[in-house]
Image (tube, rainbow, N blue to C red):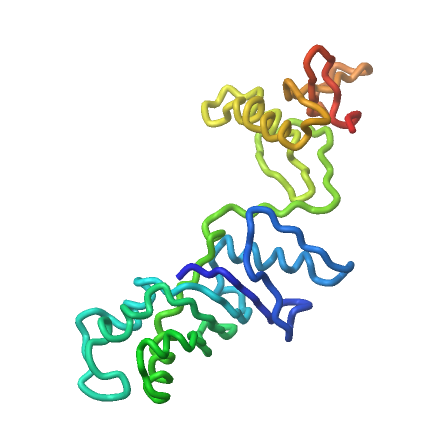
Length: 260
């Protein structure tokens, strides 16, 4: 089931209080005092991307819309109860009538559903008494264990506040640290490598286009290049250093360290 609203607790400064998101937009701004836990909300986003909710050890409070897959686990088609608080065909009389109903629920730190709330309008439509409603909620809880968010399956990249895209020695090892370390080597490899897996278009077309989206209308770059710093005192290349350069139309390349 796709989760819209998600809150969590049991993590660092959110040990005993719920904190999270009513909804997640394409661009979100988190505002708060220093040491108020803003960075720990990103830990929640990372879990939302990975989908490893049950491995986090946190408690969750979620809101989402019931889908057929989740409901059919709780109310399998073709099954009937001859007695009890929910008699009759489990799918036709109960599960199918809850499709697209919005509910809220909580899970414990082991991922087990412990509380489910459904709107009064849905209960009224089903015309159930108190005992049957409680039994319905118990059955719903059994089907809610595969929560996902629209972010689930997406790549998560954490950027530190202090970023350091500096000159770097060449290496074939490709990695990018949260503070930007490794970026110069990545750019160098993609531009200079003969490997078909490392296309220079990634840098000189895709990255350049994204960079211009950020900088326009203040500036527009025509190219991204990588250049090696020549050592005037020695011919040794043991400690060679490469730096990213940006170029505007009809202007010389400018080292990233000298650009604004």
